[in-house]
Image (cartoon, rainbow, N blue to C red; front, side, top):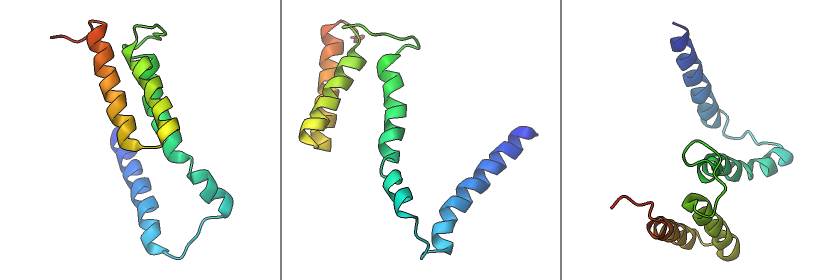
Length: 108
């Protein structure tokens, strides 16, 4: 039964945080909070992507044969230099699949 309480609690918190913007549309955050919120997407994306790059099979894999790591680093460089989302995604995916194919890691 505690699982259901956990689910209901998460539902209530999610609903209340989203509903608050409709209930109080004139409410504004402090400037420091607004500035801090600009870093949230980068932090969340980093927390999702980096473990997959460094530990694609569940263990730390720092090797030149790690296509996830190499393609990810290339995508980071492309993103930093171009600031173009489509170019970053395209070159990241292309380099990832080319590296996997070159290293013999694609099951064909």
